[in-house]
Each structure stands twice: as structure tokens, then as C-alpha cells.
Length: 243
Ligand SMILES: *Cc1c(COP(=O)(O)O)cnc(C)c1O
Image (cartoon, helix red, strand yellow):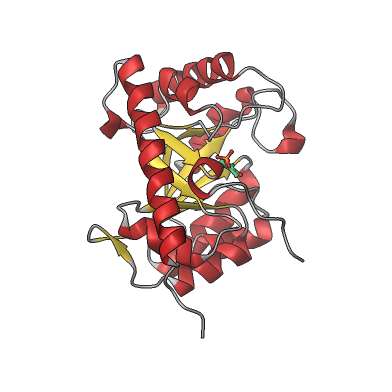
């Protein structure tokens, strides 16, 4: 049986990294004239063990992000009943989603950040209905128009958003984007903010802007991000993937 508790050295490391990250976020918010409470931290725990998630939950982090279904499911199951400051953990699916996995992801995810095509909506809706839950949906937008890396084209967002709204168990919550490799973050996030404002005119409740990772969270906060997805700064460099 594996232990669900990280060792004391790892717990101290995670606590120190979390403190440093919260300072960075607080500083970014202060510079942007925003309240830190407006920004939700999602700890992207992909490749890291459930014991790390439990350690961060004990330190007050409640939102965790994963990008692969099998790995996510294993952690969700290992951490059943674990809470953070009295609330259940919230799971964010941030990776590319195959339509044949969407139904299963909807059984445990609270938020899916990577909805980029209409074909995902029926299976997500069905999976959420079977699990008796509602699912928050973020539309991932491609900021360089290269669909191969995931994300819908900007001109597809309006129709996709209207389509989400026709599904009983799905709640359109906003937009997500990743800065394309080599691009400068600030203009990318400014563009995302513009797209989000346009979306909100049709769907006023869709106020989430999921943007900003370890390397660009200051720029994201400056351009109105409400969710930061942070992996490396919190956990350290990712270990090599073992297959
Ligand atoms: C891995 C990942 C992150 C976290 O990236 P870091 O640079 O490690 O902070 C954020 N978003 C998505 C979609 C990811 O896959």
C-alpha cells in the first residue's frame, strides 16, 4: 500500500514554493490594481503524485489541474474524501480532450478548460448527466490560429458558446488560452481579454479568463486573468515521463 502522505522534506518544499508563488501573485495583483481574491490558483499536478496534491490541500490549495484522463482519474480516486480548508477538491481538466474520453472526464472534473470543438459537447453533457452533476466549460482559444496545438479559432467562439448553452449539464464559464511558443505573453493576453469581453456581451455569466502559467502569470494578471494554471513554480521541474 502506498502512503498518502508526502515526506516532511517535500512538504516543506511545497510550502515554501507555495509561499513564494502567492507573493508573486499578490505582487502582480498589486501592480494591476486588483484584489488577490479575484484570482484563483489551479495547481497543475500532472506528473506529480497524489501525495503532493494532499500536501498542497493541507496548505489550503483546493483546485488541481490535470491533462491526461488516466492519470487524473487515478489521483481523483486516490484522494477521495480529501478536503482543503473544509471544502472538497476541485478538479480542472486542462489537457487536450479526445471525444472518446470526454464522457469519462465529465464524471469527476468540475471544470474543463480545453473545450475547442462542438464534438466534445454531447459526450461531456452525457457524462455529467450520468454522474448527476453540472460541468463548467471553458472554451480554449488558439491565439496563433494553429489548431494543431489545441484551441478553437477566434471566429468559431460565438457559435461554440451558443452550442454549449443548449446542453443541460454544461455551464459556459469563459475562455482559456496558452501563449503560443515564442510569442510575447502580454499582447496574447490582451487579445484574450478582448475576446472574453466580446463573449460576455452574449453570455454575461462567462467571466472566467484562464490564462497564465509559471512563466507568464504576471502578464496574465495584468490583462485580467481570473484563473492561473501553475505547475513548475509550485512543484518544481517535471520529472521525465516514464512509459
Ligand atoms: C502544464 C500546463 C500548465 C502549467 O504549466 P507550468 O509552466 O508548469 O506552470 C498550464 N496549462 C496547461 C494547459 C498545461 O498543460
